[in-house]
Every structure is written in C-alpha cells, then in structure tokens.
Length: 298
Length: 274
Image (cartoon, rainbow over all chains, first blue to last red; front, side, top):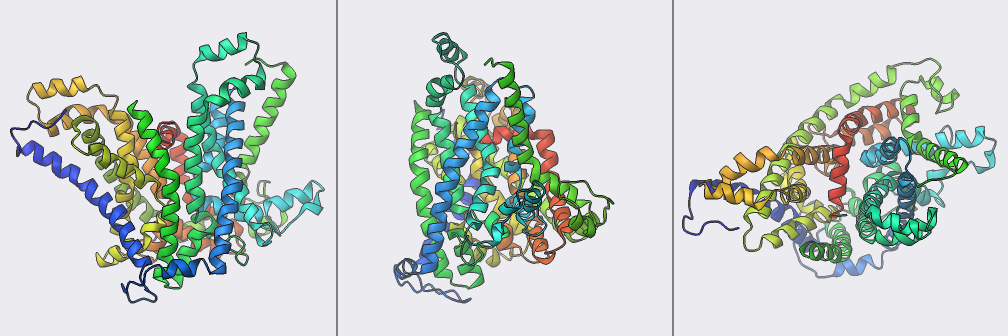
C-alpha cells in the first residue's frame, strides 16, 4: 500500500509525516551521528577537558594494543564470554526441559527462575556483594554452618577467583532468560511430532536429544546473540560489584572505556575502546539480523 | 511425559532446590533489611531477624527518596514517549510502507543491539550543549531516543497481525493516513501498548549507565546511581544497603508480579522472532 500519489499535501499526510519524522531524526542522531562522532574522537588526540579534533589517525588504536591494561581487559572479556555464554545457554536449556516435563505449578517455577533477569544490574550487584562478603556474607556463613569451613574463601576480594564469582552471578541472572527462549522454542514444536517420536520408542531424555533439541537452533541463536552482546558490553554489574578489582582481575573493556574517558579524561583513547566494542558487536549482530530478515521474508 | 513416581519426586526436589538458589540473594536482602546492626552480625543472613526493626528501611528511604522520585519522573515520561513513537513507527512500517522502509527498520533494529559505550562521549557532549546535563530532561530525551528501536520492533510485530484489508476498507471510505491510525489502529493497540510500556518501564528504571554519565549530580540523580553511591558510603551497614536495594527493586517487583506475562512477551520479541 502506498500514499495516494495525487494529493501530496493533505493536512492528514503532513500530520502523519511529522510524527513519523521524529523517530528517524532521534535515532539517526543519537545512534548513527553519535557513533560517527565517537569514531572521529577516536582518531583525534583529545586528552583533557578541552575538546581537540586534531586528527592523528589510528594512533590510539596502536597504543591500545601495546597497553598491558587493555590486553588484560580484553582477556578478561574473552574469559567472561567463554564461561558465561555456553553455561547460561546450557543451564537455560536444562531448566526449560525440566519445566517441560509436565510439572505442576510450572508458572510459579518459571517466574522464580526468570525474576533475576527483570532486576537492575545495580540491584543484583548489591545482592551479590552481600552474598560474597567474606566475613559475614551469605555464602561463607552457609558454608561454615554446614561444616564445610575449609571451602570458605575471599570470593570477590580474591583476585584469582573474582572473575569467576562475577560469571557465576551473571549466569544466575541470565539463565532464566535463556530458559524462557528455549521453553518457547520447545512449545512451538508440533505435538504430533513428539507423539510420533514417542510411538517410535523415543523416551525421556532420548526424546529431547533426538527430537526436541535439534529443532531449537533458532532460539539458541537468538539467545546466543543476546548473551554475546551483553557479555561484551557488561558494565553496570561489574562496576558496582568490584569496580574492576581487586587490581585488574575483573577489569573489562566497557569498564576501561568508562574509566579512561570519564575519570582520566583520555577522550580519544576511551573513544577508541568504544569503537572496538561497537565493531565487535556488529560482527555478531549483523549476520544474525541478516538471517532473521531473510527468514521473515520467506 | 510420564515418569515413574520416584523420578517425579526427585524432579520436584531438584526444581525446589533450584528455586531456593534463585531466590536466596533476594530472600537474604529481605531479611537483612529488617535487622539491627547486631542481628546482621550475630544471625545467619537467611534467618529472620531476632528483633525486627524498620530503622534500616527508614534510613535508606531518606537517602533514596529524591532519586526514586527522579527515576519515576523520567521513567514514566520516556516510557510514554517511546511507546507513542514506537506505535506510529510500527504503523507506518507495516501499513503504509514507502521506498526504503525496510532499510529504516533495519537501521532501527541495529539500534537495539549497539553497545551504548559507542555513543557515550557524543551523548554527554550533546546534553551539556543543550543544557540538559544533570537534568531530568536529558534523561527523558536519552531514554526516549534509545527506546524507539525496541518499541518500534514490538509494535511492528503486533501491527503485522492487523489485516491489510481493514486498512484498505477505511481508505476506500475516504479516511486519511492519520485518521486510520487514530480511529482503527490505535483502538486495537491496547495489548502492544501494555507490553511495550512494561518493557520500557523496567528497562529505563533499571538503567545505570546513562544515569551515571548524564546525571551524577543531586538534581536529577536516578535511584540506580543513588543505590550504587549508597553501597560505597555504607560499607559495613549491610542492613541499610539491603533496605536501599529493596526500595529500588520494589516498583519492578510489583510490575513483575502483576504484569509479568506482558514483560515476558516483551523479552520474547526482543530476541527477534525466537
């Protein structure tokens, strides 16, 4: 359907066009112009509070890859992604299968598992700060009371395991979400297929392995992209829980971008980190969107 | 699927155990909020307080009151604006269409996924130029702009289900584009508005990054930033910290309990055609 071509300037059309123009202007400016502007800043030598758009090329990027702090942050980001994404996907799938077993009060369990995902990262970070507190926190107290005192640990205050503590907490927060996506995928498989497989003798977890799970590629891909993008830009949670510490043990790229830019006023340097984050997320998101758009057209 | 009785039982034990692990952090937050400093030290975190007190809740509220009010103001305003704009976009992109409308939609959709770090510096510069730094208006504008991509996606999915023939019929009756939107599309939009509103309310309310770069000052400071500050300033007063967490979590918890199923629909759409 198209606009009628003869009357171009009816009042009606002008009103619609004006309302519709607001969004492209806002998104165009705040997303695309700002991204471009950020790239320009990253090519400059802007340091300190006075803006400088003196273009020096890729100096900042070259410096980044020689900066041990950047390499540490990059490595932490990768560790985070490698541990967090597969574990959240598997745990979510596991929860979805459990709830698919004709469980009574399924809705109650589902709401409980999904609840952490609805909460702000500032809330979950505060909650886990209390969980992990070494002296009187929940985990160490629990461990002590059950006679497993030797397992007590400094948790987020121990640089050797702080990053794993963060991964555990964000798995807690996200596996309800992956569960939800998988559960919807399972529910969309036609009942007749399941019954046919059951007639063929597939039973229990066999049924899931051979019939259900192979059909969950689409939800798995959606969840994968969402988790990847999150793991890449994870800021709030780590900023509030550990601030990147102890030392640089939980320092990740988004944290470094923030610190370099807003605490140390290394604007060009921070902008370069932001540009790298943006490019990496494009590599993940664009093929995915391309696939979804093509699937929609079919 | 049918299971022998024994395995059924172990399934439920597993489910309850998992539920316990998922709820533990929230439960201890709740119990700790009602404890005196002595109770925090001498009782197990999971236990209810020995001498319950509302003192921590009152102390935390005094600190969080103004930020909570700020958060309510910009969250509601940006929620309404982004939903209205998303609705108009969804309508144009599904029912009017124009040359390049698919490209516009694609460009919007990318906006859902970009790491906001990539826009932070220009955003801060823009807001200070506009005089909206440390200002509720700056947060409203920011959250509206970055909310448009997801609300457009939500409304577009719903409006795709309205038959084109309905629009065509109205058009033959001489109704214009805007009239069709107001008289036909909008009255059918209650469900997508609830879904988008619930989704936007929770995500704007939960935001920390925009708040911390745009409104660290007291004038417009969001509750998320105030809670992070509270965590820094009350290092050993866990009861006050947990009480502050409870206050900030409360609106989302209420929304989740009452309108959870709509929020779930928003999450599903966010995963683009799962």
